Length: 379
Image (cartoon, rainbow, N blue to C red; front, side):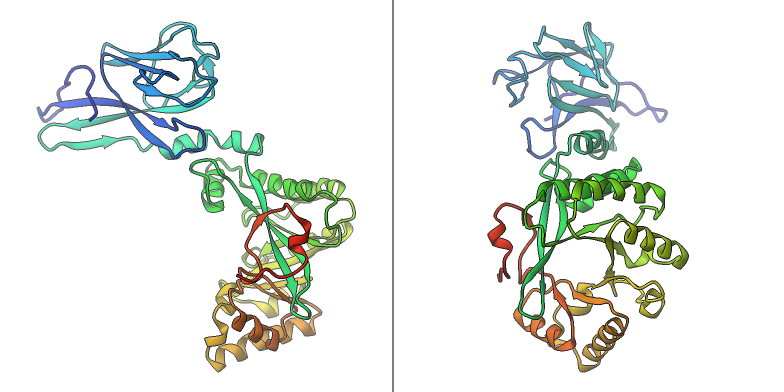
């Protein structure tokens, strides 16, 4: 139960309002974000189990810091800790008043202070939603420290089921960033999605190194990345790191709206000895006849077109077959994404697809054993 500090200021309606405080963060590394009510006359923080908030980190002192209430506001005191107590990035030497939203760090453990107000008989809670802000505050740590890893999903030929390529996909184990969607959503709020995307591509190349040099590496771009000099320059640095490895840059179909820009970008890729793929084709408005005005090297058909195609109507199969034939006539390699079972794989093969990708052949996983990439991994 949250213990309310301080007095009970009056609201305009004459009802009483009480205030309570909490710290939001992780008591253990790689644990979920949790909320810890700041209660009692003295709220102690440290590694010792007798503390009000026990932190599981060897960098935190046994009795690291404490919070006391002074004039209804929380005051933070460092208890001569070894690795310091910080407020909004600055190490404190004396007692420091805390305000809602302050970032409080005990050695390497980061929290954010929150306030709740409960007003009168209505008991309406006015609370700060700090989890999102707390996650955003750690985003620079994720990007600068590259605290993410790249997983790779195999891409196979329909003829012979040979593994010829890998698509790199980002994964992060830090609480709050467990899915690529959460990670890039936080990045977009700080306008860092392009930088994060660049770091992901670079780490994907560095992780593979010289292993399996014959495999084609498919690298994603973020839909908000502008197809201008910043992206092209980053790809130039990527080419220097990748050496002679074959690289395919994937663009979402929705990005390919300005044919002049796309044509210029494709020419830049050719100069860098890279290839172009349009990703998620068919997920939205399919514009194949327009897209082939600047033909890619690869066209990745979205899973919405091919998933469960073995059970689809003849009309749907005929439509997909026609799209594949148009791609083939333009010299484009047609790749079916999202193949989850043998029946769909067989139908896609009959429809003329050149390549497969999907859980039936292998889930995204860290790159460890080159032998695991030599063939399909059904299941």
